[in-house]
Image 1 (cartoon, helix red, strand yellow):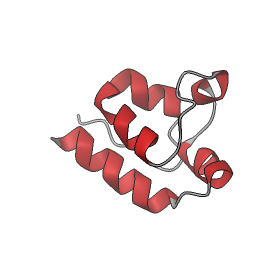
Image 2: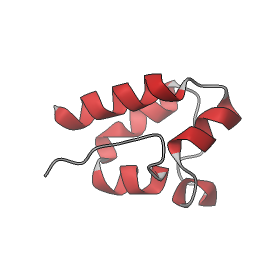
Image 3: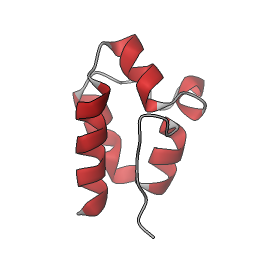
Image 4: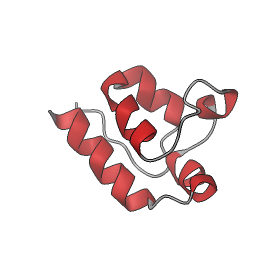
Length: 67
């Protein structure tokens, strides 16, 4: 079964399962991938903090995982 990312997915889980997604987080201004928050913060919460559209990043992340 493919790994599917939602707005509720924890960033740390995404990076563990699909490390190739890291550049997407970086390009959207989320440079704290190694910080403790990434281990417990979901995509929606991180997007709210960084002023990023959660639907847009989820779409990009899922596209990267499907490649």
